[in-house]
Amino acid sequence: MIQRIQTVYLIVAIILIAIPLSGLEIVSYTVKNEPISRNAFSLNFINENRTETSYFYLVNILLSLFGFYIIMSFKNLKKQIALAKIFIGFILFACAMPIIIALAGSDIKPGTGFYLSLNSILFVILALRGMNKDKKLLDSLNRLR
Image (cartoon, rainbow, N blue to C red; front, side, top):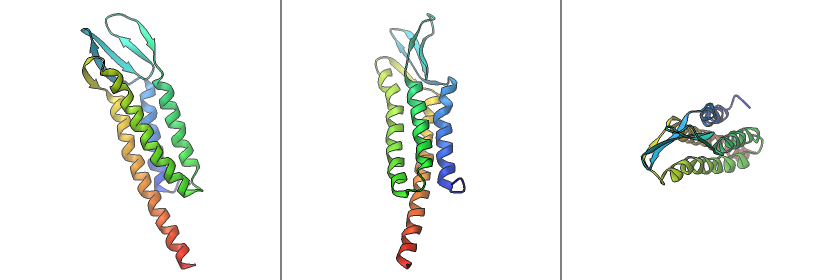
């Protein structure tokens, strides 16, 4: 399982999705001249030390678990390819949500956690490429039988 290159790519994608759980900034913006910085766990109002709960950490955990499920479904290649395509959509949705929420303010600046999550899409696409190569190889072997 680990000798397949797509497994390595998916592991890197999972790590990139899980790194924002360390508290990296996802997006920062200002509302009524009050700077707001959003990480995976809470909204941090810089001037006042208030925090409001946020559920982006659950999204990151669920995405990481879904990526692990994709790795574990290596025996059914068609299912793995379909799940990887769905995974790309989930990652795009998870990256778009903080930006959509930040549109309520002005001066939007994506943070490091946002860019790491976006970079994970590249590795999922590379994993899809490896899966398609495996599928072509298996199809060619089936034609020879």
